[in-house]
Image (cartoon, rainbow over the protein chains, first blue to last red):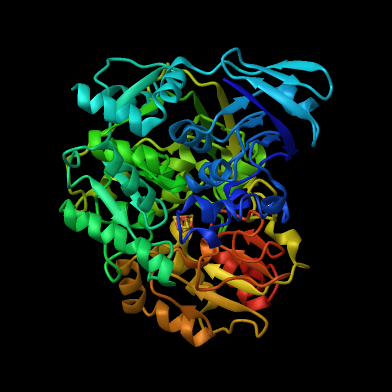
Length: 165
Length: 418
Ligand code: SF4
């Protein structure tokens, strides 16, 4: 899987209230949530972001609440993947469970700038910065998470398991 | 092994587990609320399971936007009700019988020591105060667990926190945990178990232990946990709806890091905007004026918290520039507060005394901040926009500081008003 796109850059500790503020959580409709994605971190983000774009952030992305609405909103806005120095743990599991690809990389997070064009080779765990002709390594995805991704998320994984038993 | 490792091992049928290991473990209680359950229910239906794994182990609690604040919230709450009826769930709590989930489940003896609990709510870690392994997960995890009774985990590394020394007057569990988060940062315990130990913890009452474990997530922790003891026994006796088991860490258990705190040096502590780790001594913040004070939430909405605030505000008035909102976390606490005369103290002082709800804690309803307004709350998060307008601010404190602040109209410590 190769993910190509333009980057929007965010800082440290982007919390789930910034990704999708609680005031919009009286719905779980992905399209509705996407209208407000990242709104409290960048007011104009919902109107600027285009399908196929990528988010690159610093440390502890997705900290705060357990709301799955956060990765859902990002995915529904058309963002292909999120790269960060580190992810808060519930966001990390939610992203894999719902099938939003995420990558941890110190180097990528440090060097990629807003507006850069990047290409992520998900299978090899390599992030290529087309704008700067650089390459960074992402942390390998644990085998179980790969299993989840190839099953198409936790629900499909559980469905197959129940069927098999 | 640590207490966390022992509980996880017991639930996946292994003698031992070690940090980093991926396990599939049996869960004792699965929890979701009116924000997270709707997604869990939709996803559950996609699995095609014949039924739920156990109708008496799934707790659905409408508390965030309940009593239903608008039509959309009402539709979400209805999903919980309909699902509970369809699958005959034994742990659905209707408005009028509910409370803030993390106050309700321990109070009702539904979560007990030694349990493995997952909840689609990040503050599920609260139950570590009882000596349970409890952690927040997503709605999809809950959907899968409702079908199978299992959930996948990576066994976390443990961090040991040792608290010793005598607590200063009015300093409590909230100050200890804010101080700790201020010290290690909002990702200081990322992916890890936070085990709170030491002589100060051994004499800490249950409500304060629940407060501490509640905020483990604010340091990035997977769970917070305190080994059960006599205080735990006293608390669960007469409440526990199931058998419970006390686990404790072995003497030679391995920790990635051990940190000690001399509690006599920990002051009344406030987290300033916009991160729980941005802590300062309350006494140094007297120039900060406040528009709204909130006492409540799963962190500090228990009866002891209300007593503490009432003790300070009794016979006094809320500052004319302040709106004070007091929210008991459960119906039982509400009733106790009425019986003990606390409700009267708050209303006489000019405060709102509300029915249980998460309400303002997450900027839901019942006390939303306007642009530029500033609140001090006994809640657990002060992120940008958490309680309302993105340009409003939230400070976090314990209930005593909150009450003193309500009287003064600026951040204040109890000594200034009594
Ligand atoms: S009181 Fe606040 S932190 Fe606790 S469960 Fe409700 S919204 Fe979450």
